[in-house]
Amino acid sequence: MRASRNVAVGLEIRGSRTTVALIDERGKVRMRGEAKTLRGRPAMATLEPCERALEEALTYARSEGWVVQGIGVSLPGTLDCTRHRPLLIPSLPSLNDFPLLELFRQRYDMPVCLFDDMEAALLGEQRFGSGRDAQRLLYLSVNAVVGASLIVDGQITEHGCSQYMGHICHISVSAGGPRCSCGKRGCINTMVSLDAMQKMVQRAIRRGDEGKLITRLLNREAFSPRLLAEEAENGDSVALQIYNEMGRWLSNAVTRYVELFDPHIFILGGDILCTSPALMASVRGAANADMGSGARVQSMVKVVPGLLGRDAALLGSVVPLF
Image (tube, rainbow, N blue to C red):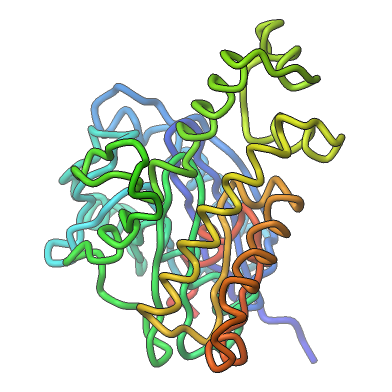
């Protein structure tokens, strides 16, 4: 069978870097590039390196004889579904209310899709990843913040307008936890986000805990999820303690989400979970144990890691174009 020549451009815009890729209808990345996202600039200046990378991808596609079906864009924030514009992009505020969809459609004269990163990641996992062909699918992502998105009857919910899924990311898992910006205490977002991980490390340092992780940080090495994952894999007691605490809060949240939405498949993704098999295993094991008392729930729900890793949103952004 002759290989299809159809591709689409995926554009994942993040706070500091933008990834552009030519993706075929099977989810295979045929070409990939990166550009710096210029934070703190006006919208057009912020997008300038992204557009250069996009134009290079289009030029490469034409040179290979590929047919570009359109452009899919993923953004790290909330969209205005009525006006089809970014609503709130905390890391790139100059893009708030910017007519990005209209700009790209006029400039490149082809179909353009715009998603928030949670929607895009969910679509990617449903088409190409762990949730392939699932009709009721919930995706939970742990990055700098916690995000979620839901597919019901094979269709992604319109949560970008109501921001409902954003609200459930503030579900409380610890009545005595720190106060969240939403006003409640112990929201999942305050318990397992990147900021929460850093606070766990700071508490360990104040207690006088010892280990390779603490030594590296005291030697002014920058904290990151990858550093934590590396030391957890090496058996560092502080790193493993942090993972156990995060696993407990996440498993609590997973159980609550299952009760609320009754998904057939629950996918765990995002940079923090993707960088650590140990944390992923801890969360899955604890969640399955928590749900074990309800035989009906446990038999119907699969809690699985995302298959696409950091490419989930990039691949998902192009799904409607094929």
